Length: 330
Image (cartoon, rainbow, N blue to C red; front, side):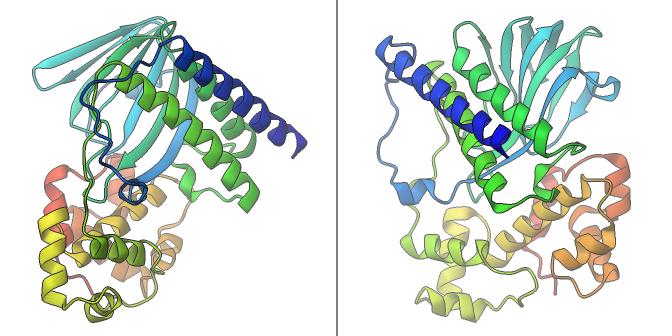
């Protein structure tokens, strides 16, 4: 524990000092067009989670592949190079450069000698749209805060989450380490967003949500998976009729409350399936299903494949499948 506390204290001091210096030296100047219309409540509905950190050679199966994962990967090229193609556009990063990925379908191609420092995470609005989702290449020397925030985060993950390959959220921990991890991840996000803003990449917006929608989202986000979902109970909690609540949800999130809940449940299921050592039976009960069979039926209905097929393929939900989230799965 003293070691992890020392890591946390050191990185907080180091990164905070770097941000102060950056501000005074105009490394991160004010970006014209950035709105300050957001409120703390608006940002409180952002879903943010660290998936994993890694430093080393790029695994052979990841060197040249098409990606549809709904998370953001940010890489610092220690050696070699990478090309990312999304639609008709492409971005190339060489040694000493950072490349910010996208959650949109894309193709990545690393050189055979590539070595990277990699941070993988999600920062998304309730609709599923990422806060920042435009690819970007920057020089590490221009944004030293990125590496200064990433290295202690990597060290903490290596020390306390040995063997986790794809998603930290399925790993066991205690409350102190959870908050330490969250603190380190928050410092990384500050550096990440600062670099994007300084590069004139604007965040996506979802400001001005109806206060009753915000209250309903908090209700759903803290609801135990095993508890039965009752639309009337949710509507009553925010002082609306079921039909009025559904109209507000569809109008502002393009999802019904049930669709939103199913989307969150599916994200949790895929995160747990990414950890190969977690039995499907355990995942089913953790997500509140009455039996593994019920979970497998629900998962196939949502994704078009069984949990084991999904795990074997190593892919995540295609964007087109998101339309199935709005189906009523009892």
